[in-house]
Image (cartoon, rainbow, N blue to C red; front, side, top):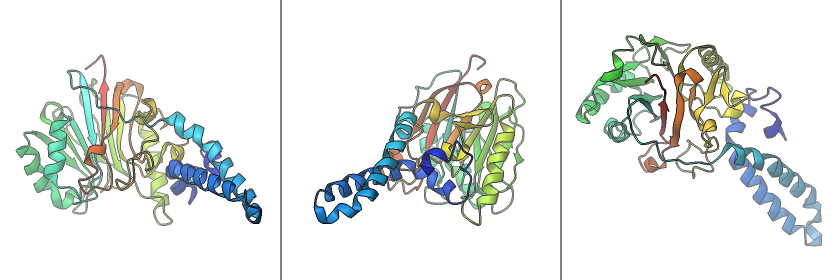
Length: 309
């Protein structure tokens, strides 16, 4: 009941609840399995005392199964590359768990024009990333969070980089960025690696979600990164005027973390959010093909198209 009602009654960002909500699918499956198992045990008279627990677990599953199914488990193939698209690769590599060469190879294969790396530890890996991207034939510009301990990096290919002259940091300078375009045909790009909603991090996590909301109030906006949150934590299928690309394409129940669990059991905490003015979402893909790369997070690819591009 709590999982079902929390987003609608404003509890999605409460300590404890906020960490459980992204695990809605796993909790639902476990509740259903245990409920059925206990119900079967109750067929024997000596186990009848467990019946209330079995019923409670099955009620939990019954309330949550429709939500999980409605959000969808679509693991779609990325839209075929064509002119007029903005192709955005996002991958939390947790520092050095994935080599820059692996990231560059994937970006090249997917023909990504924008690459968002929420936790590349770019303050110490910048040179390696530049070399790897150049070796993969990717020319462009890296933007990064501030300081030697910067985590976040955004790469934009040469054809687009000229329209993004600079970047501004957000509430946490090491891991939040805003890139505003000089061309009205391109969206503002907001990138982040949000705090975890733990006792020590939940204050910053809430601030970061509010910061995203403030950037989604008007205009063409694309927000990409590791939110450490599901749409349940958002309270709706987006933040502010931005809609979740996974929710729009029937993939909002597909887990991006951890890669050690099947995608249908994981937590959907990596997102791309878009305003209507940023373009139409052609596809949002959680890329399970990189599960053996050593990464904890699955990369995502968002493909946008717009009549203006």
